[in-house]
Amino acid sequence: MAIQLSKGQRIDLTKQDPGLNSIGIGLGWDVKQFDGGQDFDLDASVFLLDASGKCRNEQDFIFYNNLASPDQSVVHTGDNRTGAGGDGGDDEKILVNLKQVSPQIEKIVVTVTIYDAEGRHQNFGQVLNAYVRLTNEESGSEVLRYDLGEDFSIETAVVFCELYRHNGEWKFAAVGSGYQGGLAALINAYGLQ
Image (cartoon, rainbow, N blue to C red):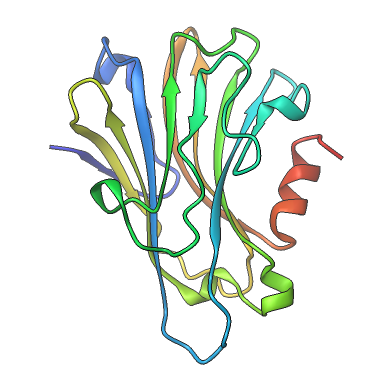
């Protein structure tokens, strides 16, 4: 049975499952019914950070226009523009091979942003049932799940979770922090502009 995490909780993935290597990070959400006239297009993105907390270059930014890291250790399975859940109800999915991740990468940050949020007058206050779940891709089992219960009334970007190295072991942090300024704010925060 999967471990249910709350905001701010951390778990040692290496101790929890010493053989864990090939993982899936499934992200899901629903959109509230409202009369906005525009479709919602939420996008998962991943930032690979070095010890300074920044991306080394643009290749460390994995999103719908750059679906894989150069070493193929982190792969985005593709943009879902409809919001219809696919695999296990996940709207978008990231695959990570922990053993292949470059030793220079200290943190893998998983975010979700709303495409053209400002132009469409959309924010995460209009999103329900957002979650992230981590699966063991070899066994198919769900390892952990974090349901973002927060009401993000004005935010247009949310850091869902982080995978990070500590003393040679991989850990998972349930973050759930919202940002204004959409994807551009995250790109700036992680040193790409």
